[in-house]
Image (cartoon, rainbow, N blue to C red; front, side, top):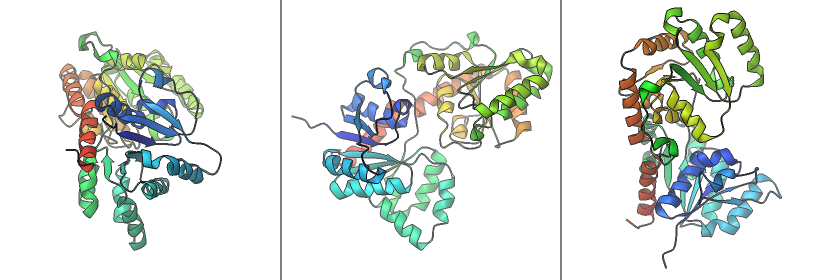
Length: 378
């Protein structure tokens, strides 16, 4: 009888929505493609509907919430660590250090996969570490077996910074599940509307949503006449005043700027991506920018601030990136793309690049190979 690899994602705050992100998707794909016994360990944070459809086969285990957080996790790992072959944890934080130490205390032969989910700020923090901090840092990394890095640029920089731990690095970006129904039909760019799409928490400080409003309003009327901006996502309460003020000052384009609210059905959301021609992200920072990958997978031409993987997705001159907060450059980028005769080509290049680099199946295949190598199975 073949023993199935048991794979646990330790993410105490996991909610339903996390199951279709890297928290759930890596484990789900390891189950679906390689028959891992995969599960997410968390507190009971509500209903987990996606377990019944989007990630069917992935399991959920609940951590008892009887004591303080670290004692809860200690008791969970004391009882289960020996049955976990691979433990996936997130971020370079004190919590992760504690999780790694407890797991290795009870399962010395176990494998820890640390998914960094970080921005370039991590590079500066490592360089600035003092002697004591570096000792603590190395103590943590000595217990980690695989270090997953989302962005290629950060991955390359970390190789030079981590010295003896650099061999543990693996480029593990976030991805797209191309088994979704919306990818069954090839998209036809000629049927798309003249839509500039923005998806996220509208009005949250890091999204800088007003930048797109200002940039669009500043365009020559002839350039933007037949185009509209569509925002999808929950609107922060304190941002409603900004929207009202924008409409009052720009009555002539009120019908061209639409707020659709959140769309929780994934198929419906992806149809919005497939209906748009341009996707615009104005964030001040992103560790990855999952909306960028979603948009690229549907062939949206990317216009983004230089955050997350924006530059990776536009590396073939198939889109535009601008400096964070640069309203003038964003407006110029909008104008350039709206007037471009090559939008269809840009769309095709973007779609192809995304499928080659950000397919969950391909990403997880690399991870599974590394896990087996560590376990001596290759």
